[in-house]
Length: 250
Image (cartoon, rainbow, N blue to C red):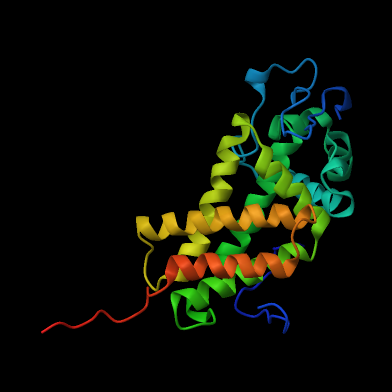
């Protein structure tokens, strides 16, 4: 599903591209929360974010997996609005209260699901098999592959991107986790060894440009070709001359 099973090194580019329903979270056009993500009767202080819930037992890990699988399935069929907490609980075969114990809102659900997708990509990434002999070529290949994978399922991409872009401070840990995974994925494509702090900073700039253009594609303000061309310009400007041999002076 989605990025899971996605192998950066094997995918070929096409020629033209290289409920608690009464308290459910909702986002208005400005991205601000219109209702509390915590169900009635559940103190905010007791709401455990999915990454913080004790996942020591196999049953707990399996329950969490089913919840995230259900979230992805619902989002893939109906986008952000289709991910309702009661629907997720029913599909995952868990009680609504249990769902809220793992994830206090659908924003937490979707961002955590996005992190899991990118973790799967990162675990499969083998930089020795990336196409390209330069930093620019390898980074271009990784960006093209991830972008294509996300464009294949626009409803799911819309749901997870919307949650990621408009998450508030309560989901900062999940957002930071996703951002750091993307940074590492891009930085590792740029270098043969371990990425430096500068490599990670460059990767963060590329990631920010990529995410903003993904939003424009989702809102039909940019075509897939536009996204590719803008990313190409960005990485060319950032990495131009990076792999050139240093000039030898007498």
